[in-house]
Length: 495
Image (cartoon, rainbow, N blue to C red; front, side):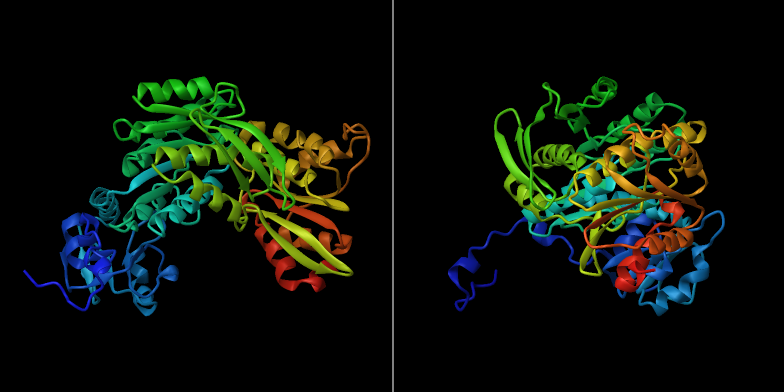
């Protein structure tokens, strides 16, 4: 046994050593990947990351050559190494450092499970029709602050059959928390994702008619989202929105899975209950909540009434995961809007600034209403809405688009640009003399592409004090409009 270093400070010599200290610093080694995937390594290496898209490879990554219906990742191995990959996971020998496996997709699943099982991280799974990514980022920010950087989460919207296992495979052995988003388009997709993650805590944000074209009814959507509870570890916690009309249905599913149940919302019986919310100068709110055994007060920087309720779910998840509520309150006070999901940009115009609210990544009836309500609460001289089509609504599409007339009017929108074929139903409704329930006609234009919308907004002209909401399904491409106006500044605003 080595003698203590006499030159080391006594407090450093007494620093506690834990089992976590023996865990590897590198994300993966050749030996660890080979053992997890039952593969054979051609070289010894250590990797700092895992990537499936050669365009996103960073120095130190392992590139996993997945095979899809239309694309074979093995064709991009050379590009991956040009970007700095240290090795590849392949199903055939290649002239680069690699781990040879029988099936690369199975290898990804094996890595995900190995990463999950080697870490003591508390895992949180999040699903819901609206707000998954924002809530995931908020929970991560809260837990990362409390753990001093030892939290991990899925990046962007990596929430499908590839994204969830990839996010798990990227989780460091030393992580204390892991936060994973889970999405679906069709029935039967949530349960396998939850089985990959095996969360200790599973949260449903809300139930709304997103993907109703594929599932057929809100009941079916609620049932599918509730499948996240099937992957909970024994004794895990199900966090459920108490204000949802489907709350009892979700609670029933959670009970069937033997979960501990925590509800959140405004409802009198909610376990994490809103007591008060006072608007703040930054557009956020000062929230007071009752957690049963205590009351907490914290500031939510994100604007919009929906974020007040979201924050209750965040606090419920942080507490269930063993996180620190005080750190969570500080993190919520510091959060800014995400790109495409609420980011706010100031655009220089003649005499001052205009505000552009970027909600261009996703849209469904519930999120449209929520963001229009947030626009209504935004101080502005004129309110402008650039709305793109809401996708995957099937036979319900026309009705849901027509129903946006009322929230547009309540938001005090003076000019609306409607983008996409599905928005024709709303254009027809706005064109009727009685289309505006408040009796004041909304000036609008309907077009087919983001390029046309850019031209229309330029022709309309932005002025000091304007607030512009840009929202639509991602496939509509309204992110191009956001980039055009935020990157080109005053020239874009003037057309």
